Image (cartoon, rainbow, N blue to C red; front, side):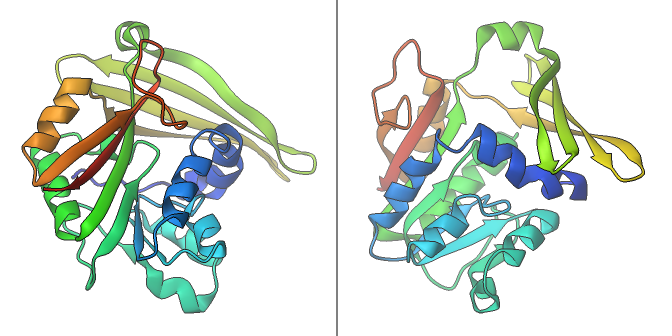
Length: 252
């Protein structure tokens, strides 16, 4: 797996941006799934805890793993010290817990950060090792938009708001598609106000995109079994207008 460390400036503003652009999209689905489980739950790629902290407040026996030290530091700052043992900083391909889970979730396109087939399969095998016999694994990735695969994104501002009174933060996105390797080369620029002026910083990373039958074939090559694929977070079937693949898997 590629080193995937969120810069401190991304971790700093992550909550204000993603509570705005993702809450109301996927959080209710994943929180309902987590709340319906009586045993242990694991969130893979928990980031700053947008979902994890809410599940913990609801009394879910939930644990978290993320590869980014900066994101985990923010997450731990939001929960009691007694719960820090629930959070692991590790590569999800070879993470190792001392117990298994009745539900493992990898929300918000975490799987897209695994750009090579070998690591995708190792990850699915590791998920299988951490599931109980009745366990379930749910992950989501975006449905590729053909126009974006051809044209990419150029200087799109998708967030611009106050992060504290009198101070704004703005996010500007660019993406350059690599069709041969099925990768989007993404740059994320943040521009924000400080007392001493305006700060501008940029971060570049890669995201893999997947097609339906490719996902099905990957799962079939793993020890997991695909139970159902939803086309949205209301659990409707895939259709021509679907924006996300929500893959629900069990052990074989």
